[in-house]
Length: 610
Image 1 (cartoon, rainbow, N blue to C red):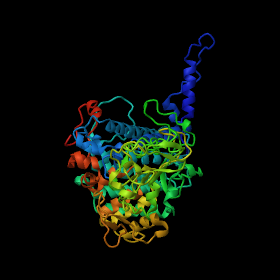
Image 2 (image 1 turned 90 degrees about the vertical axis):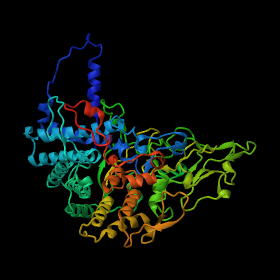
Image 3 (image 1 turned 135 degrees about the horizontal axis):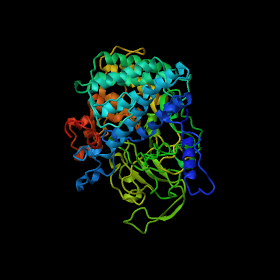
Image 4 (image 1 turned 30 degrees about the horizontal axis):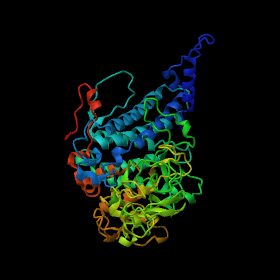
């Protein structure tokens, strides 16, 4: 079910043509005065209404600041400027700028409630559809309930007590009532359990629609989250953890793990000069539910009400690192493509991996960058302008050493007095100002997990579907729930589930002891410890493994909030937060956007602390 807007675009263009200066040869005669009420009551109209419920998933999951920034995994560039008074992004600093006027809050709030509004319209109008097979209609309504529950789950985690309309709004009103978070969770679970009972299994419906497996996966997440019972406000009990394991097991049994982690993401070479442009497959059996992007990005058309809407997948272009400023780069080309460095991997994050045997390390990060053309008479050290070298196409010009094997003085580049004909950056130098002739400032490894070769140079030209639910996460959900007291699952205890994901990442080294930094935030320490579970599994190990497995996959803030680790881990590992941050207990909830308070009568109350 690839959803596109070609029909809507064509209709809009036709309307523009008709409305131009053509009265001398065209007399307008309205052919149809069909209303939305009449159209949605038809089978075709109701099907289109349901399809419209999916399109906002693109915008919701590309509005990711509130999910990735301000965590232990992602930050923003320039933290070494904190000493000079730079305060960084408010989502990392957690200071007074993180308030109800922050644009990111308004953007996500509005997107989620637009999603809820569309789902409510479909659920409300089902009674008017009379010429549709009742079984198919029930499935479509179940899809809408799944999507409504999904949006409410995001919203209640971000804001706690929130408005919860459940019917289509047909008249203007400014009356808004906040509903306790526990009631919102009850409704989410009600919607999802009703959806599970009706939705078909994967393969028996159009690809891309919500399925029984998608609803089961989301129920596992919801029960796990409610079980933690944030501030005793969610109505959670110990039984929720058992339910989380039950639903996780159902997902695991239906969606087998992909043997090789790399096959879950766009296939590519780390060296653009060796790129083979392999055929891409974004329908891996491990993927339970994904945001879809068509092979034809021109089919999207954008959202006329949102000038910032992107035409395609932008995950290839927003994460850290870039290659536009290295010697031999050809400018803005698709070889390395666009990297906006909006989400910089924290230096501590690299130290959670074993660079030698964990296959995810080299899938996620590019260690070396290469000249794409010859460069003659290059001056590698500005302090020695008489020394010049020639760089040939294909030569290494920038190398990031793994955290467990830093370069000594003689192994550094000529730009700092070393012997290497390329710049060498150690883990503790990532992301700080370094105006080497080999590269510009704030250099970090390319985070190429979502890089798709062969797409045009642009911010959002990706066509690869973005996986939201993968069965690998179901393993980690089960491990966490069992750790919290649930009975063992169908595979055994928590460590069995956890180690299964670790071993998949190790590939041919499965069964070995992968080593991470014992103190990830202590960038100068080389002390290491295994991250295989062997009678020592705890919540920090699970959060570390979720970080390695799900890097950048739209879940981190929710993980830290759920487990009560937001303050501890972010303050320890996010360099902005640790230097200038003022993160507090109240930051576990976001402020209600000011525009929502202003337009409600009576004004809904703001969350504590803001």
